[in-house]
Image (cartoon, one colour):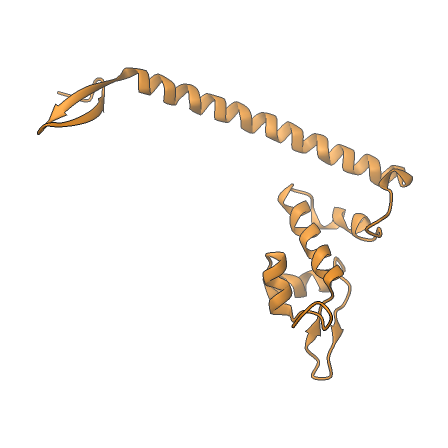
Length: 141
């Protein structure tokens, strides 16, 4: 299909990075509006529906619970979130949680980098059968 005719559930799923079962579930719990149906009762999704699916996927990746997404999904795409102080504060708090998670993950990356650089400094060159092979210190007995 194409944008003018809408997308089948399979096409919408591929475009949004979801499964058909996930899309049906999101409809069931009210994250997505019920899809329009063709005469044969197959679901038809509009581009706006696919965009909403992508937004859900994005918010889910940030760790936002599905229930917390509902108020944001009810806003029109051109709405100014600052006109909704409660939603604005909720999104700002969520953003701050994400920044905190990024900071924590960066500490883990820094720790791993330290361990890797320390290991690299302890390695020595060892020649086996004419090949130059790097081996860590303390492993040769």
